[in-house]
Length: 138
Image (cartoon, rainbow, N blue to C red; front, side, top):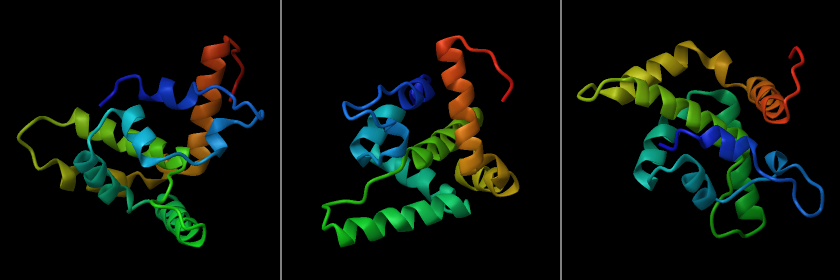
């Protein structure tokens, strides 16, 4: 996993139309590049992420949009990438040789409140303030 994944996610430049890239969906290929993981790893982490109601809702919405807009594949929201990155960090904290997926699933299940859109937005603000040098209470 890319140790600088948050910098890549939160440090994206504003689009030419002036939109914040963190409100725009992205391709799964871009998500895989940001996190620097393979498809199989993404599947394993996404399986754990399904325990988070807001993640699951976002996935369903993106799948529905893909069908309605006749996209080749569903897109993924930056919030979902953030959730997967946080789950990946938990996987990385565990020793090799353990059955990681069940342990991570238990940890995520017990700490669902740490994976909300509200927490994503708060971390985005904190990260942006660090980049710009602004130190305000969040």
